[in-house]
Length: 329
Image (cartoon, rainbow, N blue to C red):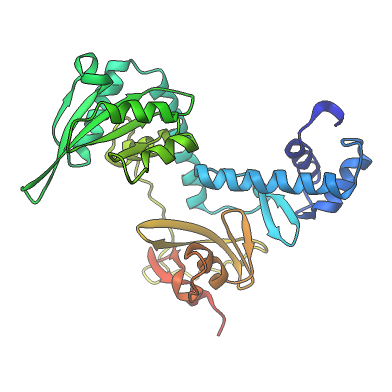
């Protein structure tokens, strides 16, 4: 490929240099790339490779809880997420994501002893009792121990190993932690990186002592939830109360293409999407033809009434309403 660009870089170059090009079919994207001599051929194999690279980037971003640069409109059409309007909640999420990335980087450079103490504090906030930092004195590399007491009767002893790693935890690391456990103890591996597939399989082996896993992203989420290492800033949004003030305000004209952020809670997890019209909802960088289709995606194929499933915040009243409030009767 010319300029030694990857397929993702080529796709981004084409879409970003033509702002009016909101979406393009991957075959047309390939043809434009060939015309600009960014690739040596525009055959179906190259086109398929470009589409696969974009799809892979979107899936990877979803799995990591981040935003891909690209968005899929279905039927082979792609665009850039930056070209889509974003609501105020999206701006807040982007800010929070930046803070989480900074927090994760701070963990990487933290002194080992401080990191062990921080991990112990996370356990205390999770409800563990008798939390102790064992550090170098721990048997078999155990760094933290604690007890989870249920109903004041059942006591679950846990042994924790913490690692400030950038490389993924491997199967052998999980096995070493399991080998350090005593009868009736469970293990927890906390890392600032992530776990390899073999490590995950080893930890979840039903025939061996259970090992729980906490990667860097989950650890940072808990730190933010418990207010450890972060400051919670309250955001206040003002709007005019037309009922309170006797002013003759002109009605605002809705901007063409401006989306409304919608959200839903499913299994204790909040999901966000952008509502443009009854036939255009963007959820996780993909375009859906109805609110129900986007809701069905969240429920793993189970049908749902999207107009009641999704909700939105009325910025004028501060109240939350079901999406059907926006549906034209």
